[in-house]
Image (cartoon, rainbow, N blue to C red; front, top):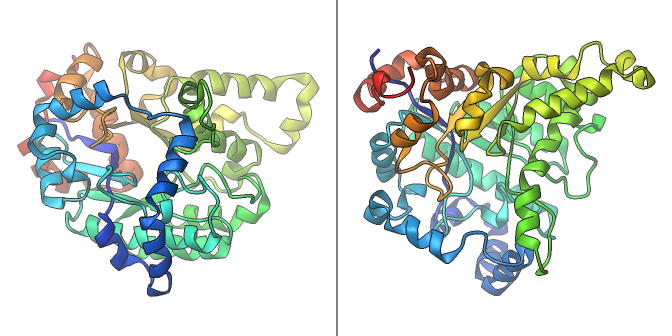
Length: 392
């Protein structure tokens, strides 16, 4: 094929409020209406989180002036037809969808990448996840074979989370689940209580994901935004070392962890540090519990959803692992490559062998998420960037 198959391993979508309400269980609709009407409370929570807006007015104005954005705003976050048109114009044939579409959309009860960001009844967090998943199942089904949803789970009740994973797999349009980056007072992911979840995800070939977004509440204080920016990726990294050191990947070799929108170069230093600790004589007890080095579990089980993949990451691709990198456009977010994906790919992959480019831009994602590359070939032949325009 003379064009690349682009699969964005990091895109975002969500329902508008009036649509989301229809997916909320009738028992919780009164609570949903109250949550939605609490504009002051939501504004206060956003202000307390980082102290000020994450994106400045100038950046938002520049983004809004982009031709592709000015034409349709961010309606593709919920409008299926516009979304397909805009992704195809950007060269993308298929996508992996996370929550958090735009300011026009909602994640019911705040569930999504910010699950557990503020105090709320655990039943509402769980209902938010369930309602979003039902909407996402329908949204993905509108573009058969081209969308893989990442479902949400709450973790207070592991049995319920397992049942939700099975529901997601039965509906055939999901590419895994997102682990909350906080556990709402429950033990973190090295605790044995999560064993049924890991076993089920491994059995059903449902990768688990972490995605940047959640952090502690930094308060409306000096420097809160800068501190948030410094730490937001680190909170998403944490599950990696919890799962490695607790032997989850040793016990469940088929389990896959995808770490999305949290950079990629950091993994080289992190694995070197973990291997160094593993090998030190004073910590030999670690080797009695784990038969292999941490980096071996990384190579076996882990991938990086490399949104914002830049020239430095491309240069370090062999240290990271060409087979580990899943490119993402972050559509339709301001920090992503839309609507200039083709131009950005030319810059990032200049001089990179085209076979390696093809793996990072789509081949790896097709394997991890089970996309039918042969079925997508026709779409790629129509919309994908020419192979001779990217790489060497």
